Length: 321
Length: 290
Image 1: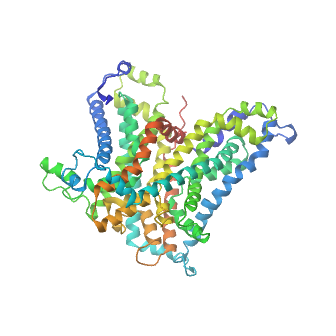
Image 2: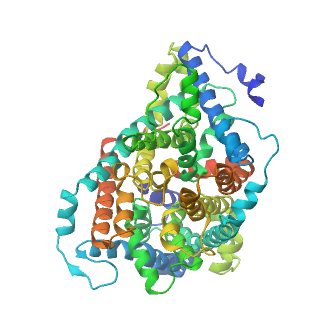
Image 3: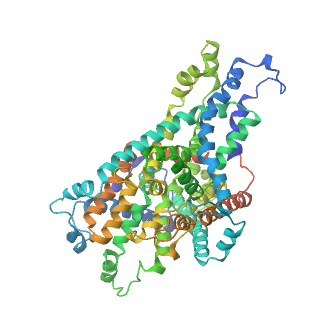
């Protein structure tokens, strides 16, 4: 996607002029752009460097030290990473992050594609899309709180299940079930967003392709498989990258899930974000900022590796239409 | 609701529908109905007493208890928090647009190696998990006494929003035809004038969209607000909600008041979405999928 952004303005502007332009012969507009470049770009760049790039560098630096934020930093070399490697809590956190990323991602995209397929041929599709999209704008804590009430022991959901004849519904909010519940809630609420993006891509597909497919006797599934999927592939691969980044950022949903919060949620429902938060701002013990930033760096590395992998795996020839 | 009304225009476009598609359609409507149901249920619950909710979770409020909102505002601190949230969201969004728009404009127009390198740098920022930034920013802001301050939080939000806003606006500015500027420049307008009175009005739609998206994400941001703010008069809504949840653990749950708090966070987003829904969806889908 990056290549496109930087190139698209370029294409329109390679008019007649020669590749080697001397400054004297440049157009007034060209000169304007050259002169304004730094004055216009610098303020944003300054904020970006101070508030974004420098903190990343500082996090990378801190990850090699033992530090509680007050006393002087002690050099620890790679030991923070070694501690993480051996820490069962971090293992769970990393596994959970990967589970959200991969299992949650596959399920969300399967549902989103199925919804796209159905919505394409449906009446009032824009209304349905809007309703499904709305959870994107809602703070994830709201879902955690609602689920905490609906699934509470002998709460509304249990009551409905009793009425339907299921006498012993599972303990929805027991320690070992919190994480699956988080996944379920997450999938439920994020499907609409990806459905909307994929639909926007699908809407660009020219109608005649579908008409041709129909004339050839394709059913809905074949139309999806042979027209929609290949034509929307680029959008889907962008979505996959988006999901990778946003799934690693999930925080408050896990924090408040089940409505319990004066303490952190049980460690087996943590992801790396919760781990970083728990190590850096613990309720009882001293902060372990070095360890926390090391965990954050692992999360950054994870996103980088998976993004590169996804771009490689999902690369296809661009289809022109 | 308008679901039951068959639309005439689309009928002709509908094809032979197989059973799978028909079942799928029903499932979609079920999905939609549950979403709407949950929303309605949250609003009605915020107007009911605690015992009432516990005994009949799906009942209707027989006499709406607006007192829940009063309690949330006074005991839970949601009133002050709502003001803080509005201030933080509006200020950070306005500032980030003011900073990012000129930058995105020159990045979209100039095609040198520096320019593409900078664009790339902003795009790479999109992939950085927030947990990487939270500790360094906390340390940095406490060094300059900006923790527990809304100004510190606004600064943080400006930084966090920079990559996405620059990325989104670069796309919008690239779509503005250069002919317009050419005319302005030939008429002797300076760079600032050209930008403000020619480019910005044409790209207004994109700028408003970027502003809206930033308002939404600042309104819902929780991690940094939770880490940076403590005092009762400085917190934003998500922090107020988290704090309220933990006090409830000691005082016993009052679900009515809790749902009133939830609605205070939810309602502005719902209002914004009903007003500018298609613009928001377009910004988040077309802008991203580009």
